Image (cartoon, rainbow, N blue to C red; front, side, top):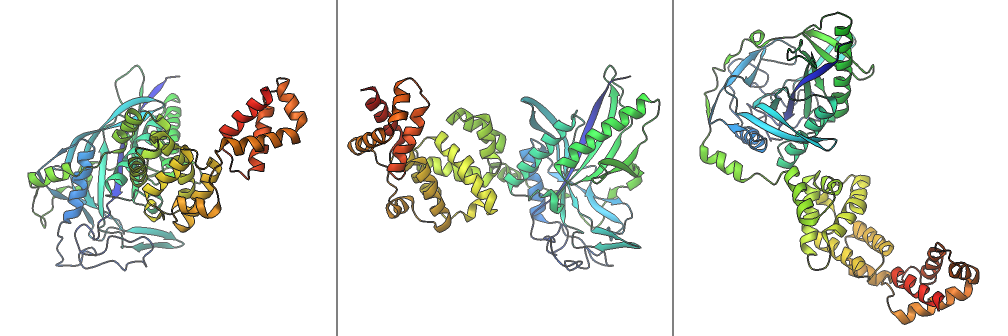
Amino acid sequence: MTTYEAIIGMEVHIELQTQSKMFCACPASFFGAAPNINTCPTCLALPGALPVINRQAVAYTALTGLALNCRIHRRNVFARKNYFYPDLPKGYQISQYELPLCTDGALDITVAGAGKTVGITRVHLEEDTGKLTHVSGGSLVDLNRAGVPLMEIVSEPDIRSAAEAYAYVSQLRQIVRYLGVSSGDMEKGAMRCEVNLSLKPVDSEVWGTKVEVKNLNSFRAVRNAITWEIARQTETLNAGGQVEQVTMGWDETRGRTVVQRSKEDAHDYRYFPEPDLPPLNLDPVRIDELADSLPELPAAKAARYRATWQLSAQDAALLTEHRDRAEYFEAAVAAGADTISARAAANWMTGEIFRRLNESGIAVADIKFPPADFARLIALVETGKINRQAGKDVLAGMWQFGAQPDAIVAAKGLKQISDSGAIEKIVTQVIAENPDPAAQFRAGKEKVIGFLVGQVMRHSRGKANPKLAEAALRRKLAS
């Protein structure tokens, strides 16, 4: 039995969040719209209609290329890519081929703690197709999506496993969301993946026949399709068979790839320069402006969190997964610079705030209180003004009403008892009421202290400072 290594390249198609389509003024937003409502003579390919390049789509693609460390070409050309399907009104797609917008980039990924660089061959711009819905006896076509700006990111064949592919596409989506160029919502078709996969014997440099798996619309599908295809090709080769160059689809229900058609080559598309569009010449000043506008990307942000605030890799990754959440967290740390630690803010953010965001489904922008009030709440807990449970109660009020934390503390009487004399009185009462646990602790049963602290908290209605309560208990029981 020969052992094989997978050689994997990815083509990722990402719809851009522009107001209009790539070559006409029709709205680019189509999800949930009635079929065929966002169309015009240009995207319907009616005679005499001419395309006009969407300036914002070009800027978004160049910005993505810069984020992926690509070379941005000042001069690039659109081409006609000919193929005939019912969801392509013109019978060709306007795309970029020989002179794309961005080339020669790289993306660093991490899998199981090990870093790896995946080369980016090109990032180019094209238009999306319509959508077919297959029904009994035929298919229905919706052309709302036809002409929506579509950015294609093509990797080098540097990926070697399903796990690496999963990490690669996950990080791509995170980057385009940080840039604000796309929602990356795979469930809505805003990001679709294609895998090109072949096998080679581990002791050989000769690559096998490449198979393409198209239109993978979830990270899970990417991982499972690659796993299946590696197993399928390995079994075929070890049985003495030949892998055929075909285009496969992923059948989610059956959990396997299925043949769709024979694989096209570039010459099958009969590329030639789009005669209705002039070459696109970018102003170098504009390219510099785009480079200056790049936000701090998630990998760099997470590294800064670890270096500056000594956060764990896990917390840093969680906090930087979404740009809006990271910015809210940083604003809270800045607002509480003199009163709270970044680590305390991270604990509250990844715990209570993330839980509430996930349960409610709202965006960070819809949180009813500013980062400064969030920082003040953490400070009240950290300085012992209220205990952590009271802090959670205060946060609940802030979340519902947007009230300031100090006002909620005052209204609910949640201020923590830190007066040593008041705590001593409660401790004396608790010991008197619980002679057996007190005796057990004096006999060396350390765990009983937790019960006694709980009794102090009950008598104080949760207001006693638990650290001071435990210290007072230990002093009393030792005397």
